[in-house]
Each structure stands twice: as structure tokens, then as C-alpha cells.
Image 1 (cartoon, rainbow, N blue to C red):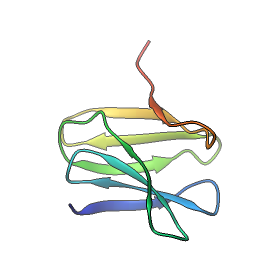
Image 2: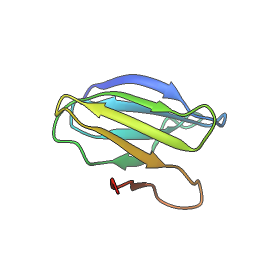
Image 3: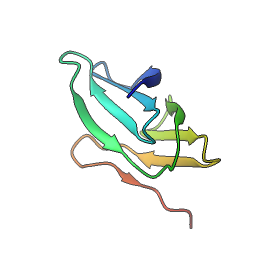
Image 4: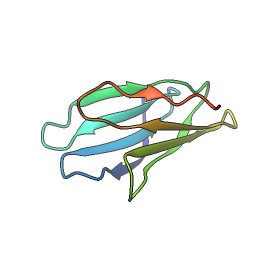
Length: 83
């Protein structure tokens, strides 16, 4: 699948991208391997961004949803459910 709008993370080794398959992907910059695949959308993920001040990620999709994620390199990323 095609990857869309890659963004570098807060650290030097990660970046993330949206994708036409409905997932966002975290990548290792040095190896270019996928570190994690983030689900939660039902259509193309057009944008995936990191907060410059926190370990917060956000994705938006053609399905009309914006999803947020907390990043902790010691744990798998889990979708932040609205409260």
C-alpha cells in the first residue's frame, strides 16, 4: 500500500506515516522497518503527526475521524478512547 505524509518523531530514530490501507505506521529510521501498525480507522489515513511537546500522536482519515495515541517506547501503543 502507499504511505502518506511521513513525519519524524520526537526522537531521532522514529517516523510515522498514514496509509491507504487504513493504518498509521511507526518506522525505524535507521532500518526502515515497521515498528508498529496503528489501527482504528476505516479508510485512508491522510495524516499522522507527533505533538512537539508530548508523546502524543494524532491521525486523521477519510472516514472523518481523528484518533489520538500516547507513545511510550517501552510499551505497544494503544488507541486513546474518548472519555
